[in-house]
Image (cartoon, rainbow, N blue to C red; front, side):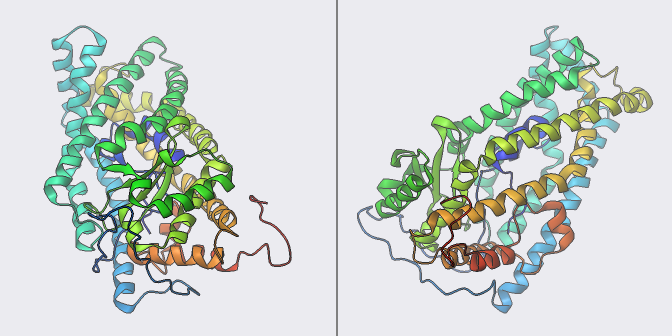
Length: 460
């Protein structure tokens, strides 16, 4: 299973702290269980050129008793899992190396000097300094991005051409620059006006920014990378089933806010998810999911995501992430002074209020963020388990056997994504944002509070 996605409850807040370092990730989607194909032949999309009035053939349902893979697929899943684990560790170290190299080569002071020569106005200096810094970081980090995409192509997860990939990468940098100019300008205004409490004031400012990003992502960011069309025009029967599930959940997502997304031109993965806040909240189903999953399975996956909203995981997650960022910013404040006192002159940094201190501050935040990673991963796994439970409960009665349907959905997701049947416990501890697929299938098959006349915990 893809373990490295950014979830809604954390992604927008995390962007405030690290988007300057990884701007191309800004378009990462908020998903219930993002998956990718094992490279086997994919059925044609049910919507490619077909009339929406024609019923699509449903994939064959196979009874699931445990997570199993054919021998060849099992080997590929194990190999990919090891690659992902190693890459996650190496990419973290490589990211630190990129920042260290920028400091050692004194590139940030050079960009600062250019910015100060360009204008004496703070915000115009940011317009010069921030794009140069972000693009330098992105170009130096490009080998890791290219390798990651190469692996996804090799294992059949990505079918996106390199030209299209490069264009998406470019759009990601553009978004990072826009956001970076705003955030870095604010950061250094706060630092220069409050040298001792900047970390607290910037933390306060980051909170509404995070909420705004959650709201805007489906309206502004996602359409830059994928095509969206009304789901009712593509699959009326699925739309009706989703509407029934939404009504039972007590949420307000009308058919007008249910969308089909054309993912098949870039990935063989499957997904159905809920994203946004308030007026931007919507259900999105990928075309690949419609081709490979039955309607009840898709409704279960969407029901899982609905659980994040009904159980208030979005707001709880934003609050949790706010606490984590509070600690990270405070640790950054407590350590940046010592770092600059020892190495600042060697790096050409005049002080914390100098634009050139940005890579040093990001270096510290990256280290502290990595240390906090297992905590955020455990928090996410807890939420995902609750959402699995909610998905089983909200679809109970809508489908003949919600547990079996849930297990079938996880089996399909695991097969397509090459989810590891025996994941490394250290990998799970450090990086898994979801419970492992074998555990999720076992839970779906054994969770039955209705057996003795009882009811679900979340859906009565």
